[in-house]
Amino acid sequence: MSTAVVFFEVEILDAKTKEKLCFLDKVRNKLQRILYLPVPDPQWYPARQSIRLDPKGKSLKDEDVLQHLPVGTTATFYFRDLGAQISWVTVFLTEYTGPLVIYLLFYFRVPFIYAPKYDFTTSKHWVVHLACMCHSFHYMKRLLETLFVHRFSHGTMPLRNIFKNCTYYWGFAAWMAYYINHPLYTPPIYGEQQIRLALILFLFCQIGNFSIHIALRNLRPPGSKTRKIPYPTKNPFTWIFLLVSCPNYTYELGSWLGFTLMTQCLPVAFFTLVGFIQMTVWAKGKHRSYLKEFRDYPPLRSPIIPFIL
Amino acid sequence: MSFNLEVTGFRLNLFFFFFLLNPDIFVTVNVLKFPTDFFIWSFFIVDFTFFFKFVLFYSVYVLCRWLVLAMAMLRFYIKKGTHKGLYRSIARTLKFFQTFALVEVGHCAIGIVRTSVIVTGVQVCSRIFMVWLVASSIRQIQNEESVILFLVVWTVTEITRYSYYTFKLLNHLPYFVKWARYNFFIVLYPLGVIGELLSIYAALPFVRRSGMYSMRLPNKYNVSFDYYYCLIIVMLSYIPLFPQLYFHMLRQRRRVLHGEVIVEKDD
Image (cartoon, rainbow over all chains, first blue to last red; front, side):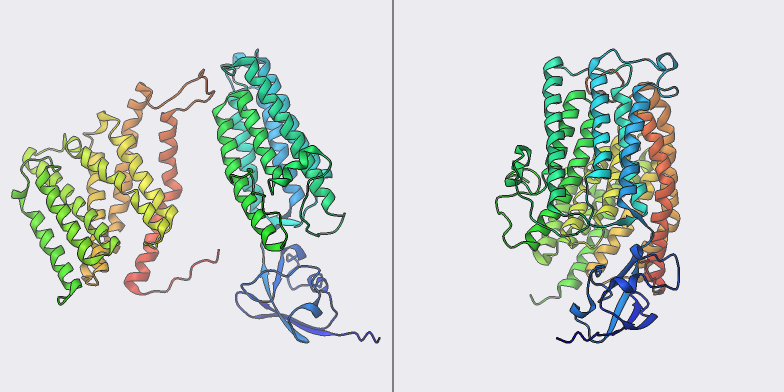
């Protein structure tokens, strides 16, 4: 079978002004090649370029092959600048290191936070020490997962997200840590029982969350960007996949509920609530995209809370 | 129906406006007497029965309420010759229908009014905050001039705004109403902000002294809240918010009165 090399002519227009940005002839099949060609302005690195068939349509992917797209031998694409981009890994590392450090500053009661007579003292309640360990463990776990476990589908996100996300995480961490490590902190009403129950819940959900992350990672071979339906594995913590589409969010909610119960602190409850609302939005979106993509998606599953949400 | 609904509606509105100006309909200074409300409600029933345009009857209802409030304020001032005690006399009415304005957020959410939910929400919340949490709860500032200033500004603004909506919905918009709606705010808006800020500033010492709406440590929720600093933050938040709203209105004005096409920035 002859393998004739098909050459395409590609014309790239700006999506907003429709002016011709460049014209390429003798382009081979892969779209990827276009993105890495020298562009008029060197600040338009590939992650920032959005090339699409229709000015208002979805962006084409790097792996798309020109031959399989609905274009003739002369293709017209529209270019849109996505704005300055930053990689997901960078964002995650920054936004998780902040709370870790900030909480410890409050825990060790560095000067200028509380009254001077309390500088560098430690709390007399053991639940405060426990809370510090749990909080720090949680964020250490997140940092390690970002470095070694997660496989990201998109490389980058818009730059302004880092400011938004860091303000959220760092701000809430400071607000929570201030009250938990305050000299006038009041321990939970039900004492030992409440703290023990909360700790069990917290640890259970942390292990669960980690198991889900591992299960999701194993779904996707290294370097690929395939999407598959996640199913329960031998690990009992993943059996929740029978009832929930995004159990990582479910376990995350559980962890923070545990932490709230452990510290009995209203700012923590507030943080849990806001996080819950955001995760529900994400879970619903994910659930909807699963349903759209897979015909045989298990009908029993709900987005985040079994049977309810 | 053989008569022209819109013309009739317009005439009914005019009639009602002149009817309200007649001081004999008020028996006392307190406007929530039954006869006044009866006239308002009967008009609103007529509106609803004949027009079925919910937004129209809502506009008319709110317009009537503000007109009644304006009348009450004028009457009090003419009778007593001073503004002291004016706020107390209208406090109940004001609280009732400033809170009632929350339904406007519902209108935007359902979609029968084409404004953004967030903009309306912020506006209504700031009004409710001023009425409930500043003016009504801190009695010592109720005789201040700044309170009267923002009350007068609100009254005039709302009357022009709702007259504009009413006449527009009846397709009989006199040019002066449109002119008023898009020009009065240039002066009224800054005046209103000054009135509100001065009122909050006047309230600060009383809040500090009484420690109202505040929670201190230690408590079982492990949280603290200081209303004094909250008010200061509210005052500071006027700095970014006021120019945005003001310039938005100026852009609207240019577009409506001078027919300029404003190209909005792409999101």
